[in-house]
Image 1 (cartoon, rainbow, N blue to C red):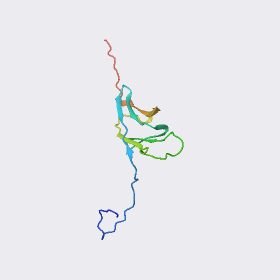
Image 2: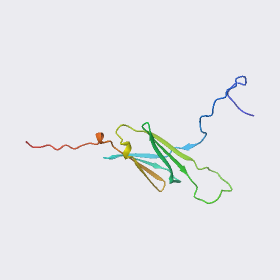
Image 3: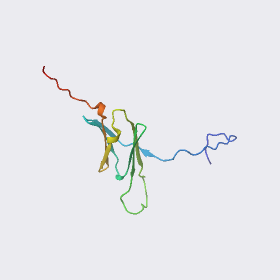
Image 4: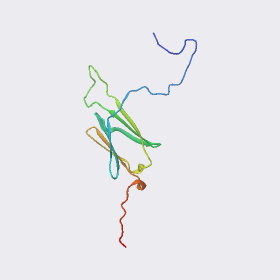
Length: 128
């Protein structure tokens, strides 16, 4: 038995444009420092080569693919490793060329430096 919400008389053939997959939303902390922002994301089970970070149209996208480190295929599986995915909109205050990332023990840190115009400058006062 196939359940459908389209009436039997109407035949609709729409192209399949969406990938059917599940993603997990990683826990993220964002810290503001003098030189910029730091985005710290928990991606357990993800190695350095399983992380993809990109900036497109002011959107920072983080995708992490977890891999099992155990050899062979399991005889019985009660859970499936999922892909992590999270996006953030960046403001004009971020220097996109200076973005860098590091991964350590399943924790991803993305450094977002401030653009030169938004870095506070200290102005000294002269005595006349």
